[in-house]
Structure formats: C-alpha cells, structure tokens
Image (tube, rainbow over all chains, first blue to last red; front, top):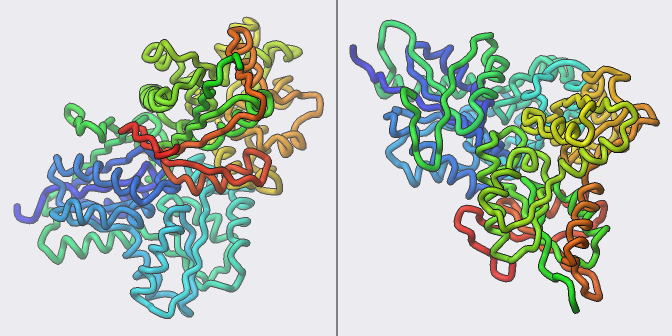
Length: 278
Length: 278
C-alpha cells in the first residue's frame, strides 16, 4: 500500500466545522479524519485575534501528537484570525483554511464582482474575506454582514419555519436588495440555513458554501503531493472535544445529515492529555 | 467614616451580568464595584460543571487580589454550576448567586406553585432552579426551558420587533399555555426582552427577574454585618474583561439603559495580570 495513511486533522471552535468534515469525508472517503472541536472555549466569533490564535495553536499542537498530515481549519473565524499564527509557530504543519477556497470560487462565479458575505462578527472585523476575494479579483466589492444570531438558530435546529425566516430575512434586508449577485456563507454553521435562504433571495443568486470548495482544495493539495490515502476500504473518523461530548454527539446529526450517533472523546487543550484509546 | 469601603465584586461570563450590576448600583449607590466579564471564554451556558467551576474560581482569585468584600455571581449558569466549587476552594470569600434570591421570590409570589423558568441549556440541565424553588416551597412544580437563542437576540439588540416576537413566541409555545402562573427569567440577558414577553403572555402572570431580587439579597447581607460603605458620595465602578474590551464597551449601554460609554480594561485570568491603573 502506497500513499500517506496519516489522518487529516479538522479543527473548529465547536460543531459547525462538521459541515466541512462532511464535505471532506464525502469527497475523500478513504481518508482517516481526526476532528477537534474546542467546545470549552467556543464561540470564537466574538473573540480577539490574539486569543483565537493562541487557542488554535494549542489545538494544533494537541492534534500533531497524533501525526496528522494536514490541518483543515474548518472555522471561518480561526481561518481569518489564526492562520498566520499557525504558520509562524508550527511551520512544519500544512494548514488549509476555509476562506481562501470560498473566496476563490466566489471571485470566479460572480457576474459583476459585487458579492455579499454573511459571517460572524470577528470574521467581518478581520476583513479577511474581502481581502481574499480581492486577491483573485481586484475590482470586486464584498459587502460583509455580521449575523451572530444565525449560529444560535442553526444550533437550536430551527433552520426552517417562521423564526428562521424572520431572523434571516432581517439580516438580508440589511443588505441592499440588488446590491450583490453572489451570496457567500462565511461561517460553517450557515449551510444548514440554505433552504430558508433560498426562499428569501432571487433564484439566480448563487450561494457559495465553503465546505465543498475547501474539500476540493484539500484533495488538490494531497493529490499534487502524492499524499492521498490509498487503503482499500473506507477511512475512520475520530472526534475530540474540549468540553461536553454528549452535547456534541447530540447535535452532530443535524450537521452530518444523518442519524448516526458519533462517539466523541473529551480532551484537554491545556495539558495535552489524550484520552485512553482516543 | 465607618462601614466597609471595599468594593463588591460582580462576576459574569460576559455582559449579561450588567443587568445585575445595574440593579446593585441603583440600590447601593455608595458602593464601589469591580465587574469582571470572562468574555474570552463565554458563553458558559453550554459548558460542563467542571469547566464552569474552574473558570469561576480563576476569576474569583483574580478579583480577590483587589480585596473585594463580597462576590456576586451575576450569571445564572455560574450560580448553578460553580457556587459549590467557589465555597469549597475559597471559603473566605462570601458569595451570592442569582438563583437563590430569584427562586425565593418566585416561591413567595406564585399563586399555584406551578412556574416556568427560561434559562440556558446548562442552567436547565443543572436542575438548580427547580431545587432552589422546592427548598422554599416543596410542592412547587418548576418547568425549565432552555432558550439559547434569546441570549443572541439580546446581544444583537433585537429585543423588540417581528424577529423577537417570532423567537420568543416559539419558546413560549413550547410551554403549555396555562401551565404556569409565574415566569422566571433564569438568565441575566433575558430582562432586556421583558417588553416583548409582556406582549406575549397574560397580563396577570408576573415575570421574576433575578437582578432586583439579588440586589436586595446583597443589601441585606451587607447591612446585617455592618459592611455597607458609608462614604458621602457615589461609589466608583471598574470593568474588567478577559477579551475584546471594545465590544463590551459598545454593547454595555444596551444593558445599562444609558448612553454612557464605559471604560473597560483587559485582564488575563491565566496569569493574574492586572492592568496598570486597572
């Protein structure tokens, strides 16, 4: 067996990164995955760059003990705020965030270059999406909107119905109608709300969800370097959280679109304690 | 000047405790206050008892460096999960949480003993409200409902209007109509939503907000021990947060019902670093 059978690390502040994990697993079924949700310290969306950078580096170190071949930052806030800290402090670990692949796709498909990005407060404040889109399409105009309530809506599982429509509708009205031709979901929780969003925006406006674009970027990275796993069967997935594994296991099916109950282990980012058999 | 001029410490996971601080300051204007919001690690509402206990003890130690005379746990989740850890590990520090005063008031005013408590997920899971109400009124039946979206709604400032009514309405419908005669707000964010709640529940159902009841309990505690400050003028208030002081200062006026912009200092719970002049 050739190829690289080491696991792909997937890191998120909590559970939203499971939308990215799902896209990865669907595209790369032979890979092993190690998912770490930093649920003791979520959400990252309202925290400072210094704090998010420190948390991400602690988490990455913990996952490196398990010899991962690549780290996917499956969290927009951490991708916006922590990628440079990770690259500086852990240069030996290849990292792929969710912003760059989504921004590239957005730059490619937008008809006029005027796009709207829904994200958390910290991601908006970082300016990372607008900068990434502009790298691929300098004349593009990205309007960023902080939508913190959408995270709570997705976690509550109220993704459709009158409340979802009222809340999402209010955010969308804050964007001028007709001011954008592409809608970018700049938070990994938001794909759960796509069916309701589709009811509220024009049918010809594409919605860019960075989960699929990130999965494709990971495949390209591994394939280009001969690092894809080449085992005959399906890979395994392990799930670590820093707090409340029961809550994670209970909410996970909403994000994975399946009834399968995950086995989730508790880890401690401070002491790098790894659970037995974890 | 007699009395005890040391500050009253007020601790919360973030900003919601300002509703309790406001009630304290209004009732006890001569006191000094030191408020600590653990914004780097909020929200506590979805975290485990062990984690919340550890965070609360770290925060209390940090405030004790400033020689506070009493600590008010202005956070329902921390009151539910961390009060025993605080009393065990810091027996020299008197602590008053928000649950006991609210529960006592509820037990006193409920006509039938059937009450509904809206709270965060962790507070509900702890069972602390039901237990505290039952201590004062053993036959009482408290129905607990986790309402995580209401925190986000209050922080977004969407306290009135169609979205607030849709979201609050859905939670209230989850309680059987007619199944309670008193509504208890078991989260310090929720008092901001009282005007909308009032529109959605019967006029004869009282809403118990633990801010005012906690302030009265603090006054009774200090008065009974001769520990009230007896300075001639108004006391001072200082505000510490563990992350994003700008965000705290920006949101604070919503909770304090005033346009006054606070001066907020950043502290670090891990290293017990105190800001210069903080």
